[in-house]
Image (cartoon, rainbow, N blue to C red; front, side):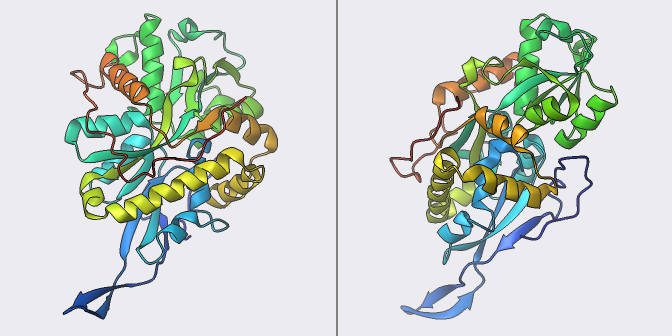
Amino acid sequence: MGMCRATMAGFVMLAVAAGCGGRREAAPQTTATGGSATHATEPLVVRVGYFPNITHAPAVLGFSAARNGFAKALAGKAALETKIFNAGPSAMESLHARAIDLCFVGPTPAINAYAKGGDVVLVSNVANGGSVLVARPDVAIAGVSDLAGKKVAVPQIGNTQDAMLRMLLLDAGIQTADKGGATRVVAVENPDVLTLFQTRQLDAACVPEPWGARLEREAGAKVVLDWRAIWRDGNYPVTVLVARKEFLEQHRDVVGAFVRALADEVHYASTDPEALAALNVELEALTRKRLPEAILKPAMERVRFSTIPDPEALQAMADLMHRVGYAKEAIDITGLVDLSVTQPAAPEERAPK
């Protein structure tokens, strides 16, 4: 899979979308005229966005050269092209611009995109939990109330961790700078948070894994709220798979094959002892940085992989978005989820210890 050159700061995220991706070819399709196949045509190209995060592990594994699960599932149907993103809002912009067809993304950007345009369909859950609130070791932050007047990083304004952080601040009676308060919530790409912690330019961060575990290990960060404590005892989606509605309607068989392959990757990530090492190999290929087991293992233990969406949790996320001001009106997610392309029974997944 060809990748774009990226600026590295420790464990580096690749460039967002702009021409960055790889393509896996499938067998060419044929068209039929008068009942017989005549001319070979270019195969359908399915463009898929995802993040090189632990919370996207089934995607990372499914696109890996070692497993190649998605390409195998689409052989004879379509070719695959991948694009790497840092956070969900930019990924959804790419989806709206028709630059990608499927995307692994957080629920908040997916719900927001659906509420604004309705051209996004959630076809599978991917992962739950996997978000943590951490603070610099030399800053007196023991709880959310201590974030008053502090500078806190999120991957991108409007993404899932940002929405959860703003909910926590709201519940604690803390106003953010954009509301006239003193607490600043700033968008920082995940790889850069480490450097800003080390140079004391950030006080805290709400991030997906493996960034929380990495900040603990390499910056001495302390966990303020672990993945269970941050919201709903960990029962919240952190990664889902969405499709452009038009693409789904035109290529249901292709999306179905992709979703069934995703179920296999979820099962592999959840149950196979070799998955952790395989994931690390692919993350190193994507980011030029291998994670030590002391980071990778606790990061994986904070995530529960599952293909089964939780409508109650998705609606709770939609309600949260309304509470924090990312939606002017209450969001009705009816029509967001379409599981008709999914096999009735998905493999069971592991729950973290």
